[in-house]
Amino acid sequence: MTITYMTNGMILKVYQKKENEHIADILYGEVTHDETCRFEPGFRVITSPISDSNNSKTVFHTKSRNCYELENPAGNLIVSLQEWKLMRDQLFSPAELLAIRLIAEDERTSTPPVTE
Image (cartoon, rainbow, N blue to C red; front, side):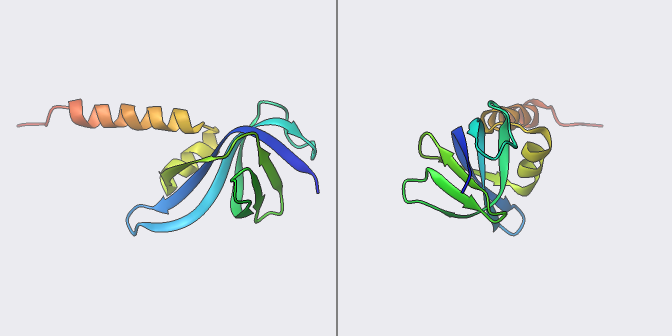
């Protein structure tokens, strides 16, 4: 089996906010080497849903039958379905998503109420 090797791994736990329903676990990482020749080193990958992983959270198989291996165990980040779509479409990193959350929170708390 060919493997995509990555660093900065994060398991994105995707939830539908309104129903608080768990949708899927998705792997994020940055490619260091790719035996499949699909990705260049440094490319950010957001996988299809994870189907299984080893106990140390360093080797993952996805529902699309791809295998990914991380340098270090993956962390976890809970994201909404909307946040996951934003990450997927823009290839944002987890750190960039957290920065966007902070900016959005600052804007919500610093915007004065509209009065008439």
